[in-house]
Image (cartoon, rainbow, N blue to C red; front, side, top):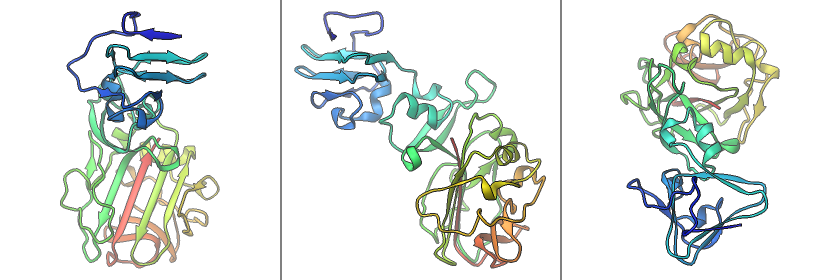
Length: 302
């Protein structure tokens, strides 16, 4: 089935919008980033250039903003392939929703509306669109410089974004990249998975795993309960070689807004996840009982 610029359906609006669009660079599949000059702009609209035929593969559904056809530019639907008008990026609730609608979207900062039509305002977030299939929203980010013991920051109506990931960088003075969300704010997000990442210069072990453990998700959303059960309810991701969480034997409970930071999972006297734990310890799969080493802690939701 071919849809030409002279044949416009109620869905294919044949005019150029005043929002930035992306142009086709060649004929090809809709879902290939190389087909588009700036794939990130697909949500805002596309222009199929003169002489180009863009194909939606059989069995696929693709979304974009309004389509403009330049002269002989065409959109071809193969078999059961479908095109649908997509929502604006800033109307979506999470990085996962952005990726579901626009699978070519790269990692970076976006605006999301965590509860849709609810009371929570839109907010800037950082999306990881590559790790384990992508769609991860950052909710905790602490890049701590060894030898310092700064205060934590709790975001009540916003999200931390990604800055540097280089160990030894001090991000404690940042108003945007340093901090974690409150229980109340996290509860406004819909998610079923967590990804937990940690690194330090104290050793070479890396914590990098995901989990859909309901007890852990509930604990982070409410601050009540614990991560008990995480030791047998996680999936190791690329680079994970830490002792935690597989050997986890101890858990702090009922830490409320410090649920993600104050020793949520650990092995007594040996291996800990601590972000200013006990108000002075910064630890990643170790027990240095201090703030002496550089650390990076991150938690993501999907």
